Structure formats: structure tokens, C-alpha cells
Image 1: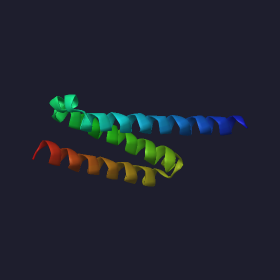
Image 2: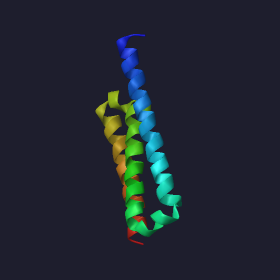
Image 3: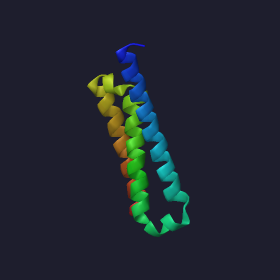
Image 4: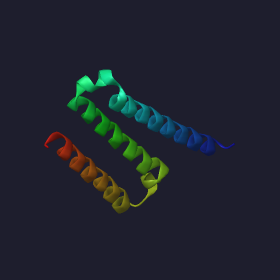
Length: 93
């Protein structure tokens, strides 16, 4: 295995681990009765974890890190808009 292939495999494994940890943390915050007392803070943390997961998926698995700037910026702007709408509906309703 070449050095670049090892680095690529290591990067993908790290991205996968980040996604799994963020998913488990989100699940715990949503389902654990003791975490419910955090209320809006837990919701904010879950939204932040969702943003991180979206970035990892877009930049690593969709390989937008190597895409033209227009595609990368468009997708990241879409992610920001979606998260802002969710934030607004959760916190201001």
C-alpha cells in the first residue's frame, strides 16, 4: 500500500469515527432522560453536531474539498441556510 493510499484510508477512517461519535452524542442528548433537563442547550449542541456531520460528509465523502469553489460554497451555504431555519423554528417558536 502506498503512502498516499494509507493517508487516504486514515482520513476516511477518521471522518467515519467523527460521524459515529457525533451520531451517538446526538442520540444520547435526544433520548437520555437526564439530558432533557438541558433543554435548549441540548438542542443547540445537537444542531452543532449536525453542522459538523454535514461538513464532514460534504468535504470528505462527497469530496467537495477538491471541488471548484462555487460548488463547495454553494453546498456549504445551503447547509448554513437549512441549519439557520431549523435553529429559528426551534428557538423562536
